[in-house]
Length: 327
Ligand SMILES: NC(=O)c1ccc[n+]([C@@H]2O[C@H](COP(=O)([O-])OP(=O)(O)OC[C@H]3O[C@@H](n4cnc5c(N)ncnc54)[C@H](OP(=O)(O)O)[C@@H]3O)[C@@H](O)[C@H]2O)c1
Image (tube, rainbow, N blue to C red; front, side):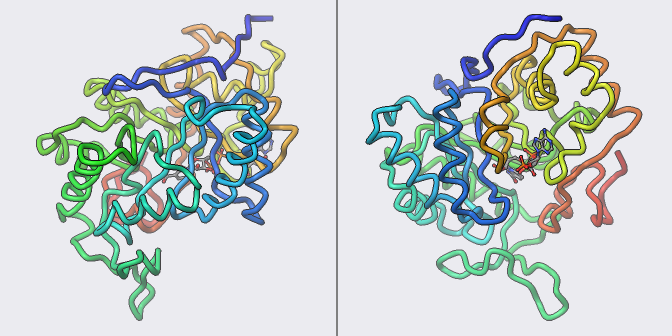
């Protein structure tokens, strides 16, 4: 049996001097969004110190209720927890208004990290509605060319203004940036994004080139869908099961360790409160075991999130996107 330490204690350095906990709780709702309140309370009581939410998820209200109770009960103080929220692409024209709305719903004066959720511009009204605007044929309605447009750069620059001119966020970053989008953005930034939040897990190791580009630019990669999202197919992979047995930990903890031991953030979600309490161990996988996990993506590559707003961004293996190269 190998050594297991505590994942909730690991902090990663951001390029602006702040630190981010490597393990956070995701808050996409599974079923009733109000369940997120107990999930957040359970996670913080179990030692988690980071919560990943977004305007789009519709769960900020429940994150806020949980935090208020945790603060009132003296479990944690505001400065002990790291809260991330995001600006959805239908609200791209007014990121500060989107953040104000998020802060009000969360009941907070500031977030620790504000992310641009996707590098695209969807046709939302002044309140960002509807979040997924469609034309008569059912295609997404954009305010910019979804493949070659550059409005996404201005959106990030508006996040920079929020960072420079207000105290509403401590750090800014990006999400769902491919290699091509990142290369287009970087020459125009004043502040390098601290984070790029993308799908990543052993089955996506062919996306290593994007991870390396982020690392080269001191952008920490935050991994979503690290278990394979709904159904958690990544956790059923034989190598992950074998390592879980060897270290006497859950398969979740192997999937978390794959990211954390290489300096990446992971933000799993669960509607199962007992599970949330039992995924904080950090098995000390060897270099060889990490390489074996990477090998899974060579033999059995798979992307689990294939939303239509990801079409044309330049990710490999994006199902339904005619321009996407295979994995
Ligand atoms: N930036 C973005 O565009 C973006 C996109 C997607 C997600 N995210 C963020 O990343 C977070 C996590 O990603 P995700 O929501 O795709 O999901 P995920 O964390 O990869 O997987 C969650 C799913 O795995 C199940 N699960 C976990 N452990 C399990 C186990 N041991 N056995 C069986 N099932 C298990 C959970 O079911 P139970 O509920 O039963 O535990 C849940 O359905 C989100 O909540 C969100 O915060 C961001």
